Amino acid sequence: MEQKLPLPPFNLETAKQKVQMAEDAWNTKDPEKVSKAYTLDSEWRNRSIFLNGREAIVKFLTNKWETEHQYKLKKELWAFTDNRIAVRFEYEYHNDEGQWFRAYGNENWEFDENGLMQKRYASINDVPIRESERKL
Image (tube, rainbow, N blue to C red):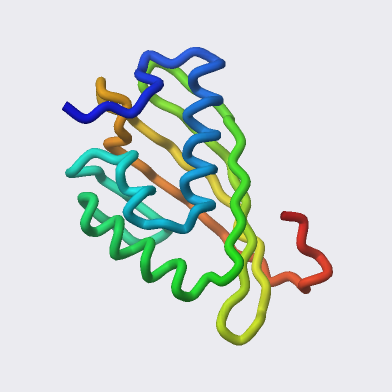
């Protein structure tokens, strides 16, 4: 049985650890590695896109990081309880034309008993920025 420590129920320390692990994984820009944190049938909403399962997650992230260059993400714990965690985040990237963006958002996560994320709901807004305005 796959497990991804720490396991729920979360406390402040383990919730922060889970958030940091997610940030670290996403900053690798490795879709396969990132997908291992999710259940095989994980349910996602990313903006207006709805996904189910690791295969769809890998495909989505592969496409994402082919167009979002020099991607850098920062996540912050917002709240937690039992098997759920809420985070706020921001990330920066530039597109093929060299336009920089900062994306702001919130995510709601739900984990199974093995510490794998079974639900991820993300609301995200992109703001065009100048390269000189980068923070990350």
